Length: 269
Image 1 (cartoon, rainbow, N blue to C red):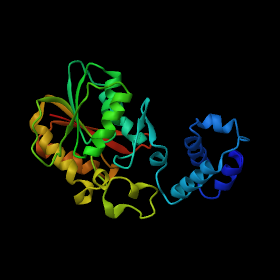
Image 2 (cartoon, helix red, strand yellow; image 1 turned 60 degrees about the vertical axis):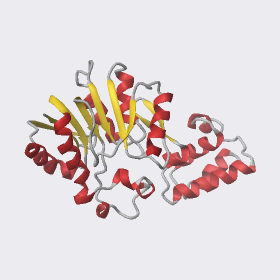
Image 3 (cartoon, rainbow, N blue to C red; image 1 turned 90 degrees about the vertical axis):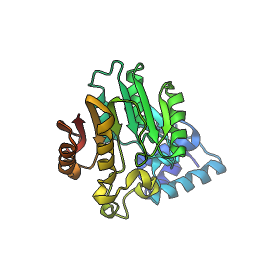
Image 4 (cartoon, helix red, strand yellow; image 1 turned 90 degrees about the horizontal axis):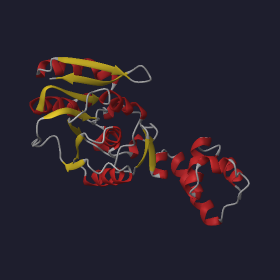
């Protein structure tokens, strides 16, 4: 069978772009090469693999976990089911952090996952000092691998759970894309989400539990004028503003993503 035959076969099961990317993964070729060689043939082993992966995608398994990679900011990151798949809206954190004067600054990222945020920042500012933490050893292994591939090996990766003691130096900036999804609010048919690590997605108290812990504990280790950048759901913006003021942050700015939804809050000590 040719590339075209297989893509035609898959068209009633999954999106055409997904099918092309899966075929590219099977053939170890970029999508452009697939598209420009539609009359090329595959052997039976690869045909079987393609069909199995199409079925996985049809059943909601994330494309990024099938191909093992995801683009974020200006780089490509390796991903697997141990880490949350980097999302375009999270690029807003990188964008806003890069607007700061980062000269000689110390940054802490809480819940680094694949390392996409810290790595993207360090690639733009090689001299910044970044501590990137995660409670999952498996996630840290993915992040360390991505750091090596992206030549940002100065990042210090630490196994840490923010519900435990914090033993960090005084910091200029804290960053987090924590779990903030209310499990009860998610459609059981939602594409892919049930395959991602639950501890990286779901949080108690309508998704606000971990955000509140992070805001409270961050206050004591941020320097005066230090900032915390935190991603959250749009409906949580008002509550986060209230939490921040009660804790003692003197100012909070909230930024919208490309969908015009409030996606991050920036609180200043």
